[in-house]
Length: 613
Ligand code: AGP
Image (tube, rainbow, N blue to C red; front, side):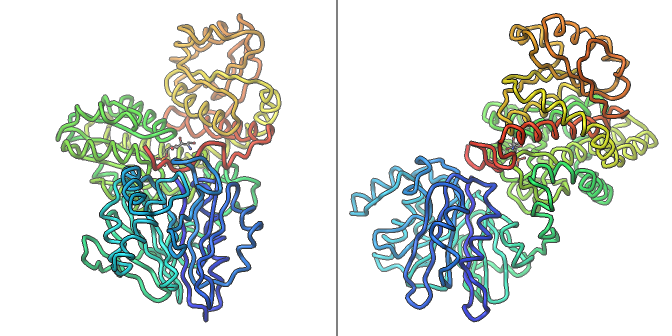
């Protein structure tokens, strides 16, 4: 749950590796931001200089004037604490006893306690509480025993259990960065006279568009003009693995908006359009639909927002394709995977493709012979690589910690897939399927229209909700699924406690909390012919207990009574309603965060990608 980056450059090409590191690391801040640090190998002397502290990267860079240093090679780290409090001592990089080796690491070394005991007995001095520090001392220990650094890396990695993306610098080899990967993501950015290792693509984009995804079990090193990768002690040929990244630099920056979250909400019309174009030209949809059709049991999994997208998929599998399915939160995989078999399929949803719980669920199902379909936004990430078929969303990089555009592109891809399956299993005829897919292709326009209509109302609503400490979000059918995602958005960025329930369930307990002016948001989604009366009943129940009643609804619900505030998102069919109802709710969460002085892009205690179980 951290970000690592390492740069090595020929001093004659006129680039400053120190500045490249700073800029690269800032683009990884979404992966964790409680502390950060740099290890630089100084020009001429090759002395190892380490600057680290708790707090934001910007402040650490200013405090130590990191950009001012001349270095040929350096590594850097932004941290989301797992082992040891977020302090200066626990911040990476971690060094050895002689201060010639420095290590940055993303992941968790499971057996660090026994390794530490072993190394302490041998006389190594530890100063931090982290699991990572064992890596620098192990590497040092092998060097002390006469191993060359590459062999020392091989021996070190052999002893590690757990997950890691590691970068190491060694003062005696000032033009080289060693790396190793197991589960945690790692890429190499290829430059002219420089090379970069990093946890993610945005940090290399200002310098190069050519990348290689390092695979599990691979180790190696980069130099300004050389890349070496091996797997199981055999050199790997990487030349055919170079991918060219088409995302623009601007795309991974804020594009004029005050926050990434707002930019990403506003980008939804475009990325939905791009995703639908991708889906209609991609044979993975057809392959995935065949797998679903040939499987007796359909399981769906994901974490957080991706789980919510899974619920929407399950809903449409049943509504459109008449297929029952079971959707579960991925961290619950241990017990749920016991019922997997070769005639089951798991649909694993993860925008990052790296969420460890979802990856572990995938592996548990695969071990039992299940087929795997994944939905991801990141090409070449771990989950797609271990799947039989991957359907990619085309949301572009999502930097805000709160998932917004990736959620709607996921639901789009999944609904498209449900329609494809419905056509194969004859739940709908070809004509109806085409009509539904055409309806989906309007998703981007529906988002634009809804945001245009609702923005002003949402702003006023946020003003009146910002003083409340609790909010209920209720809905029926699809509306209850939209409510789960709306409540997650509100709580994660504004820190107001928001709880979602199917509206009918509210009578079975939650209503006990309702008192004068308690805000209750109702999500009124199609078909109104089924839900209008019942929702009206739920509104009355809340109103008669003093609640403030707010409705986010399609126009057909305009006649609901006893509603204090109605946000009309326009008319939409059942399969397209999510694109009308979700964006104003995302905007409400964003506005609440800003009004309350929170940073919506980096909510406290959260990280964009959760790579620890
Ligand atoms: C959503 O706003 C969250 N930040 C979080 O729940 C997220 O959706 C979850 O961690 C799953 O991530 P993934 O899609 O990358 O697997």
